[in-house]
Length: 496
Image (tube, rainbow, N blue to C red):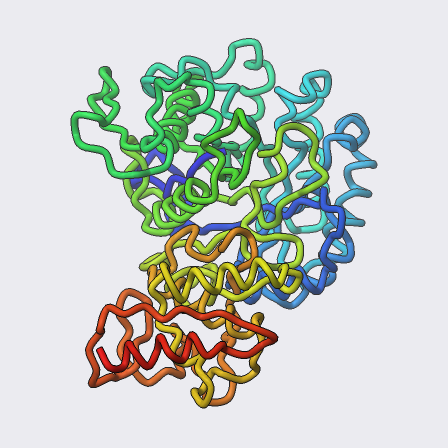
């Protein structure tokens, strides 16, 4: 699922519905062993300023919790209900009554996905896909909701063949009996072609033909950019190439005015031994760059400036998903609400409060082993070159005098010193990132807005008349107290 294109440059062939600003949304899956409650999910969405969500069903409790929030909601007809709805107008009408009409207008339902990747995952249902879409739409017309709620069906980008160069792309001809009437429906109702774009899989399947930087939106020198020999358009990332391939594939069937909505795109943060590129750094890089790319409305080479809104896959890691390790690790957050990593979104607007444009801190995990905390604390205050003097007896952060509190201060000081870079808040698994300021009393943590000082690269520095001596303080605990050896070292540093 890949990065979102911001709706391209508004040639008149693209309908007005695509001419607005692009948005970023998130998918919410439920294959989680300890699923957060509906109110917890909505609280997280609000805290992160997320205004667009896609559900893989029409969960009643979550739809009720989303009421009166203003959040734009996409509900879905699951694949296992598709056959019934596609064969019965009455069944479709009942589904809309129960899952849509019962919740609007309090819940801001704006889109219905009918099935998901039906052509590639449930091909026996393909012949009734368009019927199901039409029946759902007819029920919306009867309820006078068809103008505010769009209907479509997400597709895997694998239905596009010969996708590079994009100008020669076309849909798998065997699906023309489905795609042609579907595109006619989308055109007549002003809806979107929904596409799941995953540069991660394109990169893996290319056997190193596609450079990793090209998949991750990293800057490329001009001689490394991919050039479409037919149009001479330059492509600097996989995401744009896939989206333009979809536009050219629609043109191949004589449809030129249907906008694209990317319903899934993302990158896994963890994989097994054969998935070496499923890492926190790569996931952070991809999703951060994707969000910027979409919200900047840069568009694609074929349609610069025309927004292609995108839903990130996904909000939570889904630990119950089958398959390789990566399948369980696409989320931005763990089920307990902790971020898997901190997005780097400077200049991308207000979405996602856990980014580095806002306050984030590094703290100890609640279940961390004290011995591992001690070792990590020793490292931070030693080789990590953190200024741990506020932890000395009589200083503002000495109390509470225990390894948990002191390591939290040291971990966060290192995290801020490293400009909140990926991997700087781990300490062999005993630390985690939070948006809650751990400052207390007169102990103001680096990075806190409460600190009176200067912010340099995200780190808050207190005013000081002293200069660094280059002497590193070494901290060791013995029953919760600094040993005299530490005091001696500090006194020697002071003398220097």
